[in-house]
Every structure is written in C-alpha cells, then in structure tokens.
Length: 267
Image 1 (cartoon, one colour):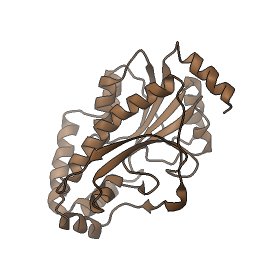
Image 2 (cartoon, one colour):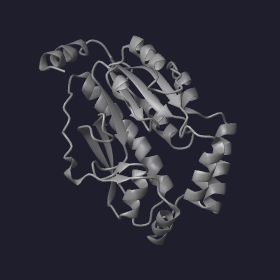
Image 3 (cartoon, helix red, strand yellow):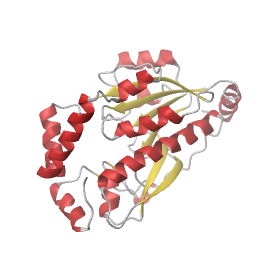
Image 4 (cartoon, one colour):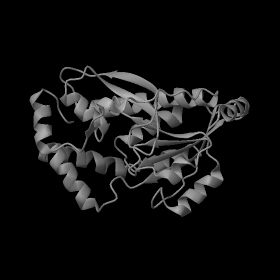
C-alpha cells in the first residue's frame, strides 16, 4: 500500500469509525475472556465491529480434542477442567452469545479460506481483520480482504515464541513475564511486523490458568489501544528479525511434568 493511500485512509478515519471484523475459535473458557473485556470496553465512537466469525477450535471430533486435553492436563486437572466446561455450557456462555448481546453480527464459516466466506466478508468492507486464536492459517485470499491489514494477537514474545501455547513455554523457560504481542499477519506464520507489545508479569510459582486468563484480558485492552491508534492513521509496525526465530508445538506430557517440577500448576 502506498504512502498516499495511507494518508487518505487516515483522513477517512478521522470522521468514520474503523471497521473491524474478528475471527476467533469457539472457546468458552479462555478465549471468551478476551471478548468479555473487549466488547464491554471498546469505544463505540472510534471502532465499529462489523462482525465476528467463530469457528471450531481444532477442526476434529470432540473425542480427539478431549484426548488431547487429557494428555495435556492429566487425569485430575482434566476432570476439574471438564466440570468447568460443563458449567459454562449449562450457563449458556459463548463468544457468539457475547457478540449477539452487544449487537454484533455473527458471520459463519466452515473455513475462513473458502471462496464463499471471502466473498461474504469482502462485502462487509472491513478495514482491519483481527485474529484472536483463530484456528486456521490465513491464506493469501483473506490477507488481501481488509482495506488496511490483518492483525493477530499472540501471547508470546516474537519471533522467539512462535507457534502454539506460548504462555506455557514462557512459564516453563522461567521468563519473568509473558509478552503479549499484536502484529501484522503475513503469509509466513507469526512473522509479520510488530505493532505493539505488553509485558504480563509471571510469578515464581504460577498457574497456567491464571496466566492465560490474565493475558487474554489485558490483551483485549491492548487491542483496543492498537485499533484506536490504527483508526487515527497510525499504521507503523517494526519488521521482525527472523534470524533468531523458533517455533513451539503443542506441549507433550513430559513438558507438563517439567512445568510442574518448576513449581507451577496447570489450574
């Protein structure tokens, strides 16, 4: 995008709210913490949330997800988490219901990279598409939809903690804080320029549960600041130096054992 286009966009948004589309996963325990805060606190005069797309978390049968969580948490914590999940389901809590409560349109999708979905969201004319734990990689088609950019929120310092479960790995590695990062999305995963970061302090003996909830809530407030700034025409991002990049996959039981050995807990 040329400098001239950036200038014109800034002028346009001096009078019109930034048009924002969210893409996220169906998680009533943790990701919902982001939206509880964001939907309650975002400035309606500056930001227009034109839609929210909520898709399945792992695109797999529920028994596979349950087995993944069982191996991750262990028997006791898995049972505790299951009861928590059942409770919020019985209470009817979901990201979709939160969006509807705030008058925000739900934009369904089987896959966010499907042509039909891309055509639908193109008609909504988003300025920015925001990924909050979106479970699919953004391909070229969706990256080109917004007038300005697609951005992602990641609960880890980039490019060191690229990949899955960055809060877990930062705890395991004894980091003094988790770095909440908002960055541009690029064709390469977690490789876009850094827009803004926020440090979330970690305790010597902490719980993964506390850290995930806390980074989601504080991340929502950081996202409000970033989107408000973008709406004013501030589009600067710092390119990532990928020379020291690393990537972490989903933790294995041995990693969870090492985390507990450090004095941390899962729940």
